[in-house]
Image (cartoon, rainbow, N blue to C red):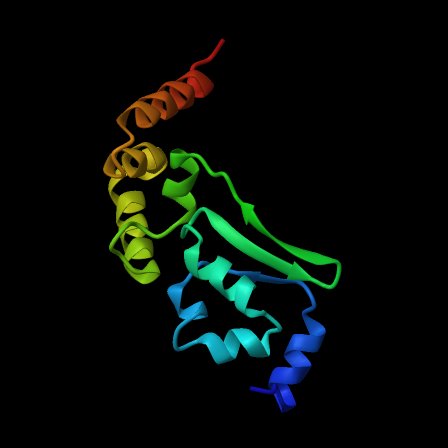
Amino acid sequence: MAAGGAAQTLLECCPTRFFLPTTGAVGGLSPLYEMCGLNAAERSLIAGATPKHHYYLKNPDGSRLITLGLTSVEQAFFFARPGRSLQETLALLDEAKREHGDTWPAAWLEAAGLSEAARRWLALAEARLTPS
């Protein structure tokens, strides 16, 4: 599939591209990935990569599969909740902020099953607020 018009302009203006893992890279979305300049081996690599862990970087200087390497605590804040859309996750976040005020990060971590991280966050917050 050849890119034309606006799609071609966009591809030319964005020479560095990040691709998220998806089986669609070798399935029904394969023509789109081909239009972005990916060959069969690259599409296969993307299809077999681990979501929320691997990312495929392609630019004129080369390409490679990279790992972001976020901890479980970082993932709790940077990704949508498992089984939830981004909009649902943002609604949960707003609710946590309303219910818990300034301590919402601890409640967020607790709800993500990261109780020890929540306790550490509360201890650090308390230490910052306690006069020396």
